[in-house]
Length: 283
Image 1 (cartoon, one colour):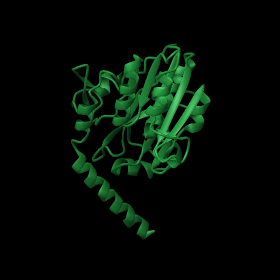
Image 2 (cartoon, rainbow, N blue to C red):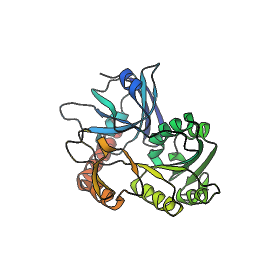
Image 3 (cartoon, rainbow, N blue to C red):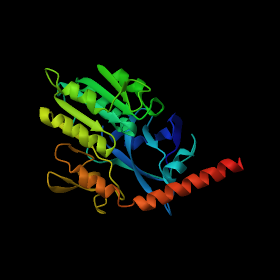
Image 4 (cartoon, rainbow, N blue to C red):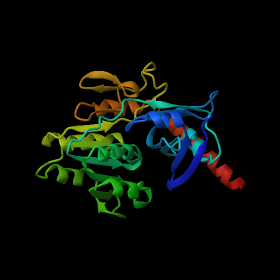
């Protein structure tokens, strides 16, 4: 069972873990993900993008936000604890080459998967303009790591507590209008953010890659839970993605499918909050 080598709290409800996974670390490429399970009898299987990997140490880095029971239980683990099941690397890697200028846009927890992609683009010799967005400064993650990769780093917060008070699409539009314009855009974050990033780049004819975060169960293409419509055709995020042409993705259909289990998810979050209050009161 893979051991947790390091645990770090990055922000409110956002946790970084470095996991012992030598085979995955050797094979992992930017954009790929793992599926982990804490309990093979009753546990939920959750997909998490590999934010970084160290083949020499034999470790991978995951970053996740606590949103339900499984991520809450995962966040409660500490260095030295084990995860029962870990499968990967899964998904198609990011297409990396020297494009020229690449603008990378990350929103919220989406900055984590964007980090690995930005690393790959930098190694290929691209100029990087990186735009990071968060609701507030306290929720901004990986600023130091992204600043080390970027030729130009732009930070936006919804409340103006840090950087520009703006949505990420505002500086993205300004970057698209540059002469010369970027050769490629990569956007990773909430579906609504990726949708409007793609709409921002569309008039400028800038190829735009998005990394989709659909509901996923088996990660092999058999269950169909992660189905999305891309260019009018059904695609499965786990085996055909997670990255697609943002100008071809039917985001409205994707966001509708993401609501399929909203009632159960809300009930689960409410139960988690109740259990957390009970645990806090018992301490």
